[in-house]
Image (cartoon, rainbow, N blue to C red; front, side, top):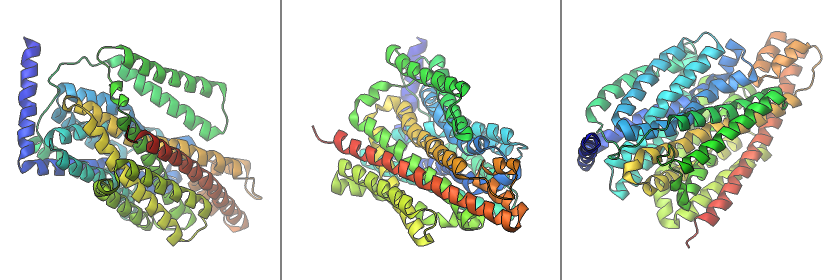
Length: 514
């Protein structure tokens, strides 16, 4: 009887959600969801412009610096599937509002962090709140917009807001850093979260899966520790430039946990992650395409902000503004992707967008960091355009393939591809750049071993040490560091271009009509 009552209540709530979706208020719901996702996107990149400031303020190790930036998206990715299935079970509105509260509280904590470790912990807490928000958001859109055409438009706007948030992050950070202390980049979240919490409580409909499903805590733990351990091992290898036995053991154990997680999902009756969704080749390829595209997009923004500030000597605000063309191109690609697909088919549109993105990455590798702003930003804009098309068409493919009752789980997979791509882009490409930078930075006359070791942690640390040394030694260290960064940048973007090219070939083959 309890299960019957629960199911009836869920049916009523989902019906209420559909009724709301038919009225004018569905667009207000979309406005609330897009505003909060804009905030989630902002926090993906808001530290990119602040990296030079943080690296000179805290003087973190190379690994700590990457964790400051990457702790947020990787925590989002690790918990999205868990939060998605939890929202299906207890109610998507409850999870959404709870995410607002966690996000706001973690923002305050991060603003007043006193050390790299404390900041990393609060960034992880921000990621957990963002996972709650993002997983519930996609499911609510799926319920609120049952009409396929409206849903494609809503997802296009949603995708554009997520990408726009990622683009606004550096600009907002640049403005705040020029007028306030670094903690202001987190406090800016608080008033927006408060408004979203109040308005969301009134207008967002409640919905949940009508069928009661067991939540598998063991699977959740396996996914979180597996992903976290693998990223930790990669970052440690990148920081130290070698594969020691302890790091190898951690990496192998983490990979084993992830494999065991997949095996468990295939065997248990009520899996945390419904792997049957990946039987649809369109779903699988769309997920891979989004992951690869967002990996390249966010990694490029991370590299470009360091280049603009530390190589070209832009102010934080100017560095953020310099990325605006890339952001505009990304938003245009996201909004007009449905029209492109209507004219060319999804297969051609996704493949062509991936090829444009890959080509721009190879162009950046050839041009290098020594090219002028026009060439550099033109290639960045082409990358943003290609990524925007892939993100929207891929997101709609994932969402439309899922049963509405499992909208939370499908939404979690979709958003996981965004956030995991963001995190892995910086992990893989950022680690490649860090390793090459560290190995390419040779000893400089007048620079002691301890100073050289610290300069090898990051370009920001090298620039600060060079400024402190001054004279010929300082100029030589800065020149050597900029050259080493350029070599690492060239290799990292070439690697990213290769991955995108492979994904384009896979998309062309897998999305063909059969």
